[in-house]
Length: 490
Image (tube, rainbow, N blue to C red; front, side):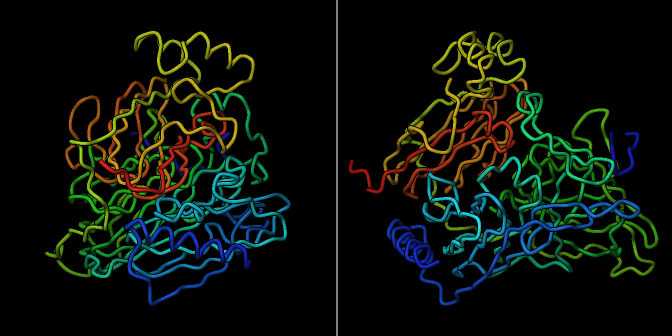
């Protein structure tokens, strides 16, 4: 049942002490900025609230949120600022906050039991870290995330460049979907086996910034920087901007050579971000429809861009598009440590594995199927299913080494693979070099696809490495990559 999917178309002290120590460790390993003169303080409270996701006559929706808002408050700082965020837990269960895509010290990463003790009900935790990279990031829990994120616990974190690109206006769209009942309540069928085994919890109602969108006002000749964040548990978006010609200038917060999106679609898997420059080239008084076309035969109208009757200017401005680079260490492929990673499991997983060679990773297809039937994991990384956030490392890398991960998606489903604490270059897809060697922290892998990524292990600690379809992570598709705290001597 589609409730309100847009119209289908045809086509505390200890915490502070811990954060200080972690910041000092981070500084000692070369990726922290000079100590920030500006300390920016914020407070977040996670608690139940009622918000209007869909218009009347539907009721408000009971959610969990930061500051009684969905999305939570925008945290906006300048590159080099130091953030100090006190998080209060007003829920009846434990929670954490993960700063997705931000290269924080390990103790500030927000992963329960792996990097911190969860925040108990009624307690607080203070996160403190430097904004070393400019870009579009976001925050969300990593405790019971399939439920907590789906109920509305997330918000944007924007780190502004010292020298940003020139635009007339900047917009942030946090895209999400919700599985709502006829009473506009969030369906409580979390963790059902169908979602776990297939493509995750895909909802029936799509929102932009916590509201079902109808129209957004624009002006002819206007240049807009659009920051897109996909906060959905599982939905992949493939946005068609009609006759407009968006230009990609950043992926996952990291600058990229400005380019038009592949196949004309702006494609974002869960947790991914993209910054676009869009010149509003339509006529005054006209409109452009933004359509989501990712799922075949399930296309729908996301939102209409409505042009004012008066143009801002007659033609697009001739302003530069390139963003300044962030301070990322360049991988040294000549001395790289190489590691093979295979993602297996899920519905039709045995069939795909047989097609791709019969046995992948550390366990044969039949053995993994037996584990699935007995409830011992549904998704696997090199034949092993995670049962919590703490586990033996999939890989241990000495500090300062370049690591190449040769990843194979031996499943029938897409997987957005996210590495905590680092950004990586995407080197190749199915053996072909990528056109832009883009930096990302979450890379979307298609079924049966092979992707190579490379990163410098310059942030010590145990880091999550997982599928960001949250139901896939909960059902086993997660590992830990350990970066040692000392330089390797060669």
